[in-house]
Length: 76
Image (cartoon, rainbow, N blue to C red; front, side, top):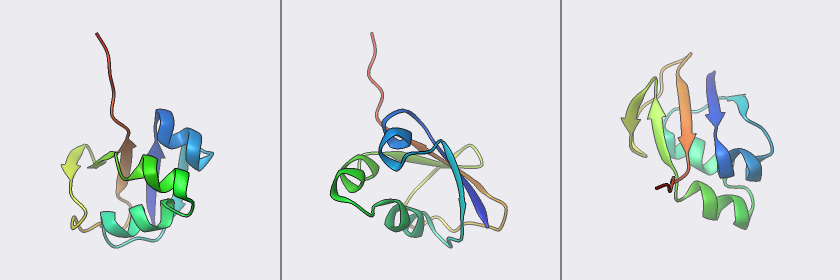
């Protein structure tokens, strides 16, 4: 079981800021979060951190890992 923390637009479209799920890779997380077209559009633009380290779709997840889902940020 892993913990997924969602921020900003990702939390808005998924409807929660944190959830638990079973996933072996970041690709599994993306698939499970992308259940609707709007959600998939937002999640596909996000960056992912695993225990604070940048991750790719192929990154393996250990039991107890924390995955942060970060949409693009803009600022000035």
